[in-house]
Length: 383
Image (cartoon, rainbow, N blue to C red):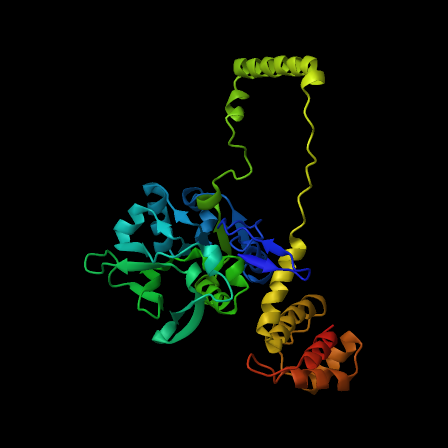
């Protein structure tokens, strides 16, 4: 898929799903990781440990688990440790398009696909959307629009012989009636399965409907500190080289044989370089994609032209900054005369300026029509 910058030059993005916290491409998880770091009240931790290593720590029972990967394949030991951890009171979310056979057999479900064309062609301005119906407590539901290209999977379940047939609940399903998220209540804890992990990527976080699904799903884990493991996508040692040379250099005899071979090749090249040397090509340094990433995010908001949504997001960040630096909670405190005077004393504004600002902000919601001039004025006053 091509995005066009202000100079009319196309920007090519990589649509490879990595779910990595270091990946700022559409299907990385940089945005989700940064969001969890700053907003998870109980504390958020990222690791590369597998489940059996995590539960070996006796304090892990007081934490919740998040796994986002393209394929969740692991050992029977890991699956047993996972189920025992949930039964003891832990809550876990596993978002994966493919899930290990042992877990599917125990819970009696299968993952299925709707066959689609190349994802980079589908994610465009003409993208088709599917309605996801998310069920909350009391069987109340709310529908969200999700791009079809990032939600090709669905579950089929066999409740008749399932070990947890009396405690399995549908969390979300498509408008076509296909199940996309399940919750298994196991004694004291819950195991939640999602078959469309791309919703939890940078693309999903920046999509207004998808980020609501992310928020509602993660709400099941908000009562405890959150641990996200990337072991099942990146492995236990993501930074370690997997080259065959690592094995050669680990054995003394092979290491010296390798060094002698390199020295021999080097001497040969020195004596033959003068008459066989080729033109050395100029290698351009890698370009900085950060500006393009920022422009793509800005383009999404400009295209929607939803000034009220921008103001509300700015209001949330402003509130967090005020609470952290000045001890003022503008979200939960009542906006009365005493609040305005205390706010004015800490920010240097007059009481009239403060009251006028909050009178305008308190009436804005997602459906409020706000002009560009009004938006700029309100954002400039939120400093």
